[in-house]
Image (cartoon, rainbow, N blue to C red; front, top):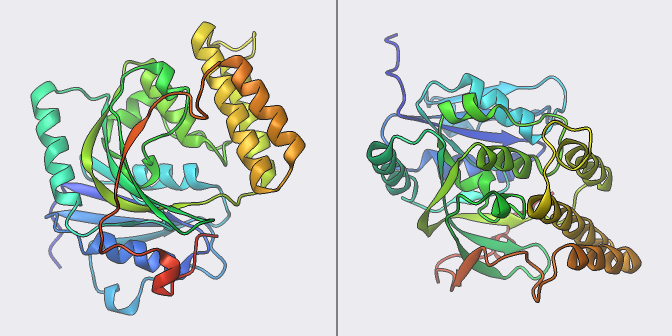
Length: 313
């Protein structure tokens, strides 16, 4: 059998215990119109193991890698990056999916941008449709571009798990995802990118439907906040932030804590952490900055619940 040519793009899909949703994500990736693209699924010790649907098993562009033990989304992305052969890497979370015919123009835009400035620290995102886990309503968000570390210390406003396009050399420069983080691993990676002079560019149309997952183990958030505080806020840390950057990060970690308390009806904790966040960064809105503008969702997109699909778990 002749060897396949080097792919132009590798798509990485981490998955954990989401067979039906994972199949939806995989099909949305396989249906894109990008030539010379391959797909790497990283099964992070699903129980039972994830299975490629029968009708896609003959597709030679799809590879399935498995972790023998659960290591988290950051580690799964690292595995996919290490196995990727292409110069460009795209990511898709298993509970999200790509809208039809959106990957090719995104990749072409990124390739054109890189050809113009040859900036290896430029990464590319896109607009997305957010599906609320509580109200099931859809909301289209178009993120803003930024090269300001203050923004990257304040949130992940651009759905990096499912709209990120990047050259593989950016991971050599910034380093891998922190495998100790089971939450906020994207925040950490992009903060490191920004501190090295990186920037975010945006394809200003919606490319993915994103599940607004609000349920996760509280211990993961507690551990992540503690690790990020040690890395960036502790006096003895070589990577310690100062001034506005430190206050922005601390304020954002308190927003994450408040959001967790809200989803679990822990009202005292909600008020406590919100109060701390507003004291650290006084403002008139919940978010630390205006990170996106809103557009009506496309009329032909329906929430997962109305299509008979399970919601994210």
